[in-house]
Length: 257
Image (cartoon, rainbow, N blue to C red; front, side, top):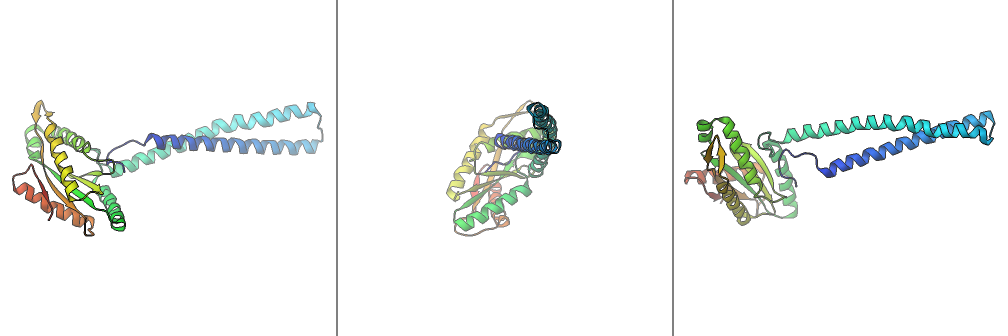
């Protein structure tokens, strides 16, 4: 599963589009060619002259003319279709991505989480959810300004992204809060992931507004193991655990009971 973010269409999908365009172009050219030959053949039958001299010009014209017309017209139209398809992909990507951090937005993250929990329920594997809140982040905005705060948020998102697996899903919950959904991950594995997040943020000595800023986080962790939970339930349990972490001074992980 692709990690939440403003990723460009993959090179694989781009190659597939180009191949589809080429195959369509060849089909259009062949159809035009066959149609031209049929029409030329019908005309020759009506005329009734089948000498080599009479056949050369129509044969060449019926082959070259449709190809000369069909290829440029088809390529132009297919390029327009391909551009429209890429525009649609870009709009779709924007609708599911948080523009600032290039992670999934809350709405799309919830959709992905619902699908993953449904699969987990059918196949019997655990899914964990981490709710991450950056400690004292409001002070960065107040002291250094919102532009500096935005820069710090992007850097934090990037640091967190590097701690997760390809199958994990990351999203921005809102403000300075992030979510990680970890399929095939029980509570113990999720706790280890939370520790990696702490270490990644601790190591990210960010320079914001000409100042070195230390970023820490409180993390609430919950797992769906041994019980079927909906996304809203997971979020509530993770939020309770996060609240305990904050209440205990922050910069720590608390696991849901």
